[in-house]
Image 1 (cartoon, one colour):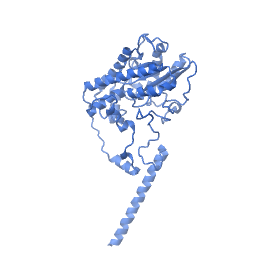
Image 2: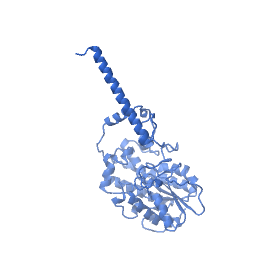
Image 3: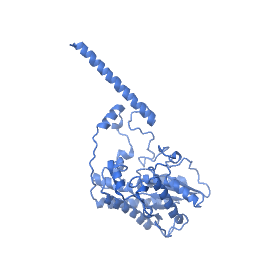
Image 4: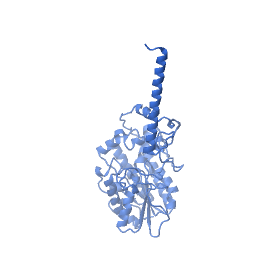
Length: 384
């Protein structure tokens, strides 16, 4: 039978062994983060943020600065420069005779989800040049999760330095889900979309609870968090949706005014989307895409399709009201599910088709004939 001294020795040895094992696990996890994510070995933060997203104090997060999208077939087409535009070529003074187009919007403009890296703004540049438009440069300034307030700020702060000729703007779902967030939270929808964009999942702002020295503790605690798999259908709230449309159109009007003050021709695009059940379930399951940044609740599919179409109609309506050319991409032919990876994000093939249809539709606008009737195109009486 062991005496008290032997028991104490064994307990001490067990404690020392446990501490050594925990130490090795901690070192291994920190070594992994250093190799896999290039995060400092002694970093206190567990979220592995390699590139800081904070760019403008007015934007709160993003755009992507000197960021390389990983695992793309064309890495040269998948890098963002020091201004947050998706290009590896320096953006210098505009050469004589160059047509310079800037595209702004959310992830559907950033076109982040196709595997090839051949985003539709780059493809549009290739199409226009091939069709004899001369020297063309299309700068992709889209950023995931951005809505019209973000584009308004970028138009005011980033676009003036580019000496651009045309500003293409495509928004819809991020403004719509701002209304969904307000409905889910039971709060009014304000002009800053705070019900949505105050969430850390969007801003990436670190808080005190993020300072976790132990990676092992973080790993264990994250696996113990209960996962809520309950599907909640978002309540109907026409007042909030109507206010969302009003703010959306107000912001588009302001974007056009700021662009015109700089001598640009603003052009609005509607956003195509997949109405099918399969891709809606992809988005709904685990709240993929939207839910990954905190929507939490979605309406039933038919209602969401109606709301997406409503925001597209609002885009065309405000364009007509303020005499801005608009290209109805959502109405420019069929958009089968093979062109998407979920309800709104384009696949590789979808990016190609989008660029083809946009290049065909934008010709009259670039030529100063915005009022020419074409399938999928609407516009004001005069180009600006």
